[in-house]
Length: 274
Ligand code: MLT
Image (cartoon, rainbow, N blue to C red; front, side):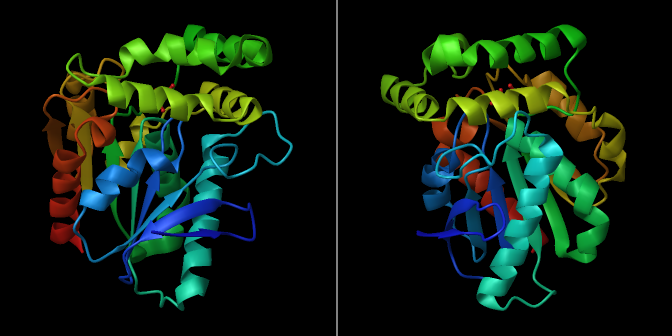
């Protein structure tokens, strides 16, 4: 793995592999790029795999801002593509695949919607993991805003304690649970609050799914309590060129709970489309 930083945001990222084609991995909430590393290590692919810390998470600072919208995250990702292009003298023929888990999936859908035309044929595929296309209803959005407001007082422990019971399949081991909790606790309060407010105002992307004409892979942990299999299958059916994969013995965090099965599904998809 090598790490880098873009000039614009500046976005910290790690990358692996050295092909021309780029796969960007957007992490979930409130995590950072390290959530992908084990799956990334299992992934056999001839692409450049790029794992950013999105603004306000991990090693990427939050420029003064109360709200980080999904569009803002997607714009940062577009800048990251330009940065990688500059870095390696990529020609415009190189392909881009975006992969996102949960909040990262919201970002991936925004990337496809906002920059699909801009990148044209370069955008070769979309991987949506344990995520959903719907916006929050008003109660859920209000809950996020209150949670973000209270965060400086309550701290990240309260958020982690509330989220953890829904994140894993029952059989997921203590080590994984402990590591994920630690990852959540090392995020910045301001970054987490800004992303929570941004998710509260994210638009419903369902109507856009039919426009995503490039190949899509939808991945869901068999026991995902947050984005259940039935809902993700329904989302997959609305995408014109989609494959649907269920990862056994995994919950909401399929790349962490079952990295080898997760990367096998991603590797097969990349082989097929690139
Ligand atoms: C995530 O894992 O990114 C969160 O569950 C997303 C959300 O809160 O909607």
